[in-house]
Length: 322
Image (cartoon, rainbow, N blue to C red; front, side, top):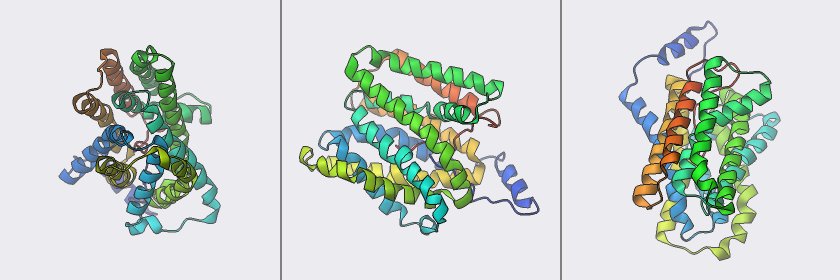
């Protein structure tokens, strides 16, 4: 997940702030529709590409490969290399762990036990977990509309997970891994948002990716013997790294600066239907009606979370890295 307020700074006399506020309510231009649709589509499809890569590559190797590709891709953008004060590096290290290294490792292992479509639908609850973590950190309840959104979103998560939980301990383990990753994303967003508003999304994300790569590299080396090269897997990992781990975040950061974080977060709602379509149609995964209903309920809860100004539980402007 990324946010970027740096692309629309407010001027001292307030003119910049007023212009930005106006941009958040005007009709979207064609390029902004493109930026709105593409990130959610890329992130929704990432679980499908993880499933393809798992046919030949160990789950422990997928994460360092995609982070390395994302890091190299973001290095092509000059803004990524803008400096950060030394005092902020401790927070970047925390982000590298809870935003990248641990969650991106959890997803491939989870897909050994749970279908890609279910994991994609569960990720539609990202705004719910961000809000729950924010409530815990601030120790106060959000406005009534957001409370309703949290209840609806939580009910949706339960419905999505129910069929998998009934298939034995292996599936339960996969669901727990995904939910754990979403909780970490909730912490990551609440740590990342102030950094990104101050320094921009790309410098923070690029450095976090570099640190995360060093963290997961030992696991990748240990997994080499369990993997084999194939062009299909190589293409899937390339898409995961260049598009999902790098370019989608760049596009979302750009969009958030142009139209505001709340409107940009609508891209999140594309993730569940995209992952569901690819998993069922292209991978032949089993379709559980209860999970599909739960996915719709979860998206409805996330939508309600974004309808009220988030004084206590912020609405993310971009999804987690997938």
